[in-house]
Image (tube, rainbow, N blue to C red):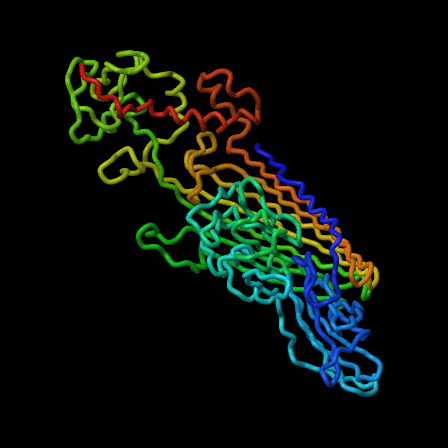
Length: 566
């Protein structure tokens, strides 16, 4: 078993950020957005001390700011969503701009030209406010919640949306499925190593510092937005050399909403939904069933004050697969490796144990009891490439009994490579859920908390059975049981002391636990084979823990480099 506690990410950002009331300054916005603008009269002159009310259309929460002497206003620390901007000033009609979209790490500019009149009269403007980045110069792509759901995505992999950004390419490498059941993709951004891309979830660390992959790959239903920056991002992300994938989870609203979904891929008997490969699947594709389902719910606990959002996604995969691999031939099990010999061009002559001069061949086995014991010079090849039965280790012979005999002809021109085929089943389960709560204490103070729990079980039989293991039936070199639990906590408090001073506290914690055990745990094949001192208990030193290393000496060591002549 292997268990790894990866990181206590104390993104204690207890950061006192000085916010100037002009429209060009708000920092630490990686999980928030902002609205800014200028209030003017009919002549274009500035209107100071105008009251600007920014209302979250879904939550009903209000934030008030006042224009400065230049008529400018700025409100940051806004949760992404849709807002209404209302401006009031004595001697002017009330100005109202609804449906202002606020995005993560972006700013919406809403200028308000006021008209002289009674404040009880309202001038409502329906034109969309442009989204600008006035405090950042990064090159980025932002995916909204709707885009993340609507864009086709096999397996609904949120991290894979990085491939839709310029300069991103997936490499032909993947971590073992036993360590990476969340489906992290190894993606290079602008030619940089895949581990150079940083991952943030609600402004807290979400990257395994050892494997370089995302830890909690968010459910698509949990995301309000996902922003991917590939160039010129701020120094606060200096640990990332290739890019930043910044995900922000959804928040509840005053209205209750829920969603449900199910995706089914089924090739079980009677469904026949998959195409057959005529070369490798003459009898049709193997049975396969992938069921991915879940949903979300969000709403209010206290109207205009306390909100919640929760989502869940479950995966059940059952698959039949096959494996083509190599096992020792029947003759090799008794020491006869004559079929393993392969000609070598321009090979020198060597002497065998029968006193004959023979050409050196690939996979030729030499007697370790002959020649110089240190350098190997002068060793004699076993006659006919056959090891006498008396020289075979009884323990090695016993180990060979755990491996099946060949059942296929083998590769073209060889009877000892790819000579064993097997079929078996693969099971994969995922239970992923998240919950988030937002509390707006008052106009000056708000806080949020989120907890994510993603658990995976991945089990596969081995081509050689439980004891010997061998490759699995999905192409991976792993057979056994993997149990992974990834957790993430984020908590933040934002308090506005005055228009120029904001305190933001954020805490993040993540835990990446991997437990992998081979098949046959609790058995003692080493003891049964006559090898003492290996199977010392029923768990840590049992089963394939022993065979994984001992299989390297079956068949006996083959020497292809010795060319000494008598």
